[in-house]
Length: 64
Image (tube, rainbow, N blue to C red; front, side):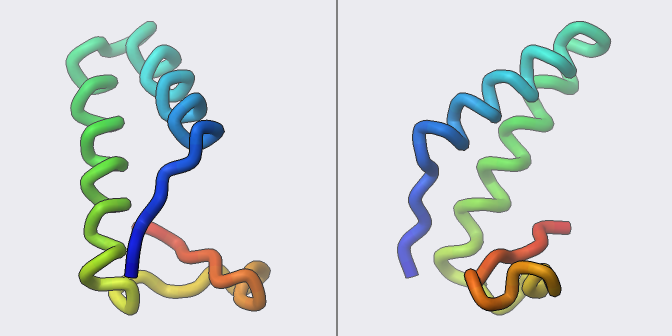
C-alpha cells in the first residue's frame, strides 16, 4: 500500500502546527511530526487502524 499526503493535507498540517505554536511551540513541532509518522505507518500496517464507521464505503480510517 502507498500513502500519499495531498497538498490540501499538507496545508492543513501547517495550519494545525501554526495554531498549536501559539500556545506551545515545542509541542507544535512534535505533534505534526507524530501525525506524519502515523501516516507513514499506514503503508505497512493498514489494518492496524479501524475504519471510521461513517466513512467505511470510502475506506477512511481513524488514527488513534
